[in-house]
Length: 167
Image (cartoon, rainbow, N blue to C red; front, side, top):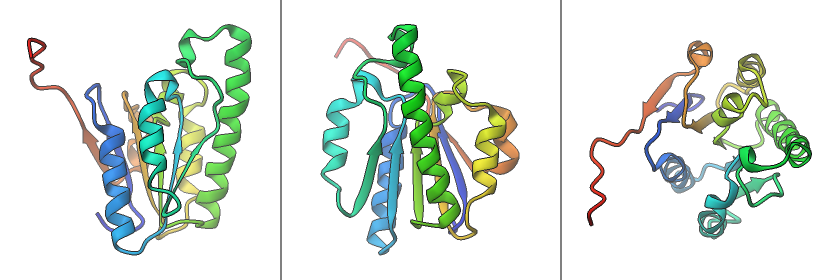
C-alpha cells in the first residue's frame, strides 16, 4: 500500500488489531514513525495492551479511556465520562492527522465509535479529509459503514471461515 493511503481492517473475526500492529511494525522497519490510538478496548484488551506497549518508544500507543469494562456494560454516568475521554482521544487523533505528526496513524476500533453512536460518519470523514497527504491511516473495527467508503483506499475484511471449538 502506498504512503498516504487510508486503509480499513474490519470484521467479526479476530486479528484486526494484530494485523494493524503488524503493519505498524513493517512501517517501523522502514524507519517510519507510528502512533496507535485505541478506542473501546474494554476489559478484553488489557493484556494485549501490555504486550503492545512493549513496542514503545518506537511505536507510540495511546488509550484515553479509563474503564476496564466494555462501553455498553457501563452505567449511563460512566458512559458519559468515557465519552469525554473518547473525545479527548479523538481530539488528539485530529491533531496528529492535521499536523502529520507521524507517518502512520492506527485508529484501533474507531469504527466501533460509529456503532456506539459516539461519533457520526461525517465526523470521521472530516478527520480523514484533514490528513496530510503522505500520512497513512489505518482504521479498525467490527462493522464497516458504507458512508466512509469513498474516503478510503483499501478495505480488508477479516472473518471466521471455520471455528473448531472442540480443540
